[in-house]
Amino acid sequence: IAIRMDPEGSVRDVALSPFGGRLAVAWTNDYGTSPFSVIPYSGFKQVLAEGSVDVITPAPSFELLSDIQTLCLPESTALTAPSDDDGLRDYLETVESLSDDQIPPGCKADLLAVVETLQTRE
Figure 1 (tube, one colour):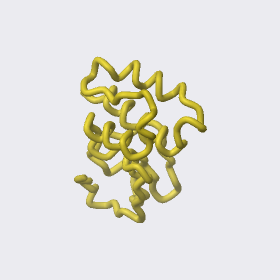
Figure 2 (cartoon, one colour):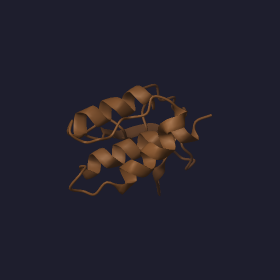
Figure 3 (cartoon, one colour):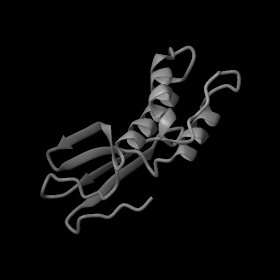
Figure 4 (tube, helix red, strand yellow):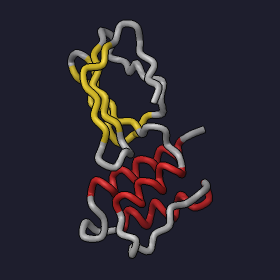
């Protein structure tokens, strides 16, 4: 992951979600603007007095989506990760409909972050 920083900014902390679909970056600068040149995940941004915490989807791809699903869902789950844009909408709806006893919440959040980021890319 390449994060291009504003010369006036500094990263204070970085954390990756358990399945790799979300990356939280806490940073500070004097301007209150994000110093990142990556595609943000629109699910979270918290502006702080001295900077911000951004949650981004690192390297969103169909491969990442498939890898996360393999890591966190049992093989018995009848869900196939899409391999192109055509399947994203149905996949999103299916993942959103799964209950907490069918999918771990962290897994669901990571899958949704990757899908939503793939849908918003240019």
